[in-house]
Length: 290
Image (cartoon, rainbow, N blue to C red; front, side, top):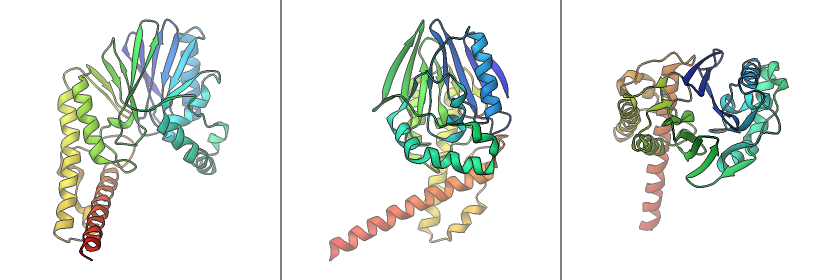
């Protein structure tokens, strides 16, 4: 795990063990706010110890951007009395899937035996919720697409967006919806943050935001076009394996995960959804005809 300061009061922690996933901490006059936690227990506990020292033992709250294990498992390392804020959809996802996911992870990696699943204690429905702590105002924003429950945290004074997995070097929509992800990326552009902390990988700096968002939107649009063409031409689904990531304008990135495999999974997801929509439409037309 390594860390850096994004601003004087914002800390960024990046895992060296899994996919360069990020955790963020904001130091406020009322204590430290932690957004997401690194999944491996040793990294999560190191961060908790470091922040306990930096904040003089004072924490304000925890925020979870979405239910995925690489963002949620490490929350066990922080004081049990802290409120955990998230979208209500996140709480429902963790109730439905969290314990099963943790049990499977424990079977493969006994180091996770020490992890206990943490559920959100304060949730919101709809588009936004505000949190004020000292001289910091945090706007929690629904940013679905990667998953239905993903949120971002916009730090109003600094104009910094902690985006969760709504913004990643390779947008991943296998458990989400690419159309909603495009809408979310457009929403991020309209928000016009000076800096974006992605769910995984490097920080997007001042002056790069619009260019990077346009690149990600183009990538998602391109995948839809390629999937539609395969369907329109009645080509085999397996031809998706032959479409490289670079064909949609992105480069392979060192996330510790296979960039091409992630891209291929995205394409299969879009293809299958488009095919289901086409078959559903055909079924409705046949029903109407009879």
